[in-house]
Image 1 (cartoon, rainbow, N blue to C red):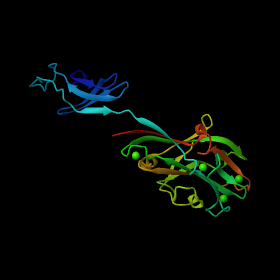
Image 2: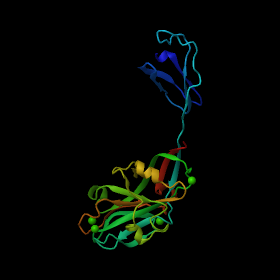
Image 3: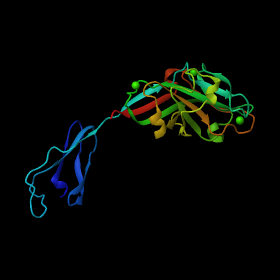
Image 4: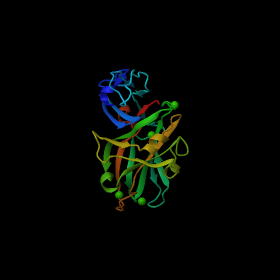
Length: 260
Ligand SMILES: [Ca+2]
Ligand SMILES: [Ca+2]
Ligand SMILES: [Ca+2]
Ligand SMILES: [Ca+2]
């Protein structure tokens, strides 16, 4: 058997379907079909050109009802962080590991450290319920737009900007001091790239995070630099626009998904 014994029938707008390899022997063969693009169905058929033979008998008819494979187009949806529920929390003292003050109304989120070697953390809040309940998420990217830096750039002195998550929220929908330390549903699901593109920093969620995203309610993210402070007693933090900023600058969650 060779590639000329097969044909790939296509539906939809699949283009460039070619049977490009046949391997195997005896009763089992592996047939590889490649396409150049498009979405729809691909069905593998066996032709009847009188050349398929086991040495004794020659196949006398083709086979045109092989299994149908479907390549589905992914959908993309962009969620925006809810300004009434997102915000930043500042640690109560250098080593408390607990929230001391918070702000849910400012147009910016602070991340890094403050005077007194206290750590900033931020909560983002997305209503992700519009996702189909059976959506399979192929990519989920958090995006934050930088406004300015105070002191040293924390991306240079505080390590990676890390992401934890919890659904439907970290305890209550509203921002509370307890959100600084309340248990995460999933830890370390992403880190932001240290280099922005046009002032936007991106974090690509790993598979654990993608699976955990709430298809039927809300999803919150807690964001913080891995190193809590740089021991200089001075404020070194970055300001990102929050959900209270003008719409084009708000934190985003961009999701690509498909329906199985
Ligand atoms: Ca807010
Ligand atoms: Ca500290
Ligand atoms: Ca849903
Ligand atoms: Ca500092």
